[in-house]
Image (cartoon, one colour):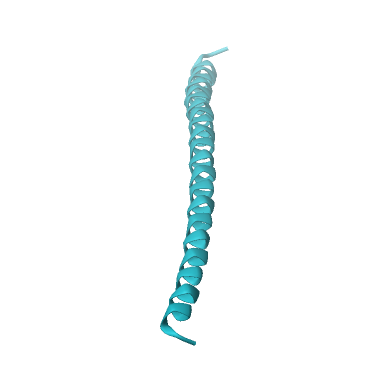
Length: 82
């Protein structure tokens, strides 16, 4: 094998590697896009969960206040003479 044949083989291999790298870049871009979509989706779900949790916390505080007021009323009525 002479130098020219060797160079042709190397060039052919390099072209194949270049094509493989291009395909890998495309695959990475697709994966990055999918990950971005998942992050957006997860962020939206996180916000919904956080909103629902905050509503539950507010409801819990309200229920504690109501129960507390109720208990106070019951104790006041118990102290009144009948």
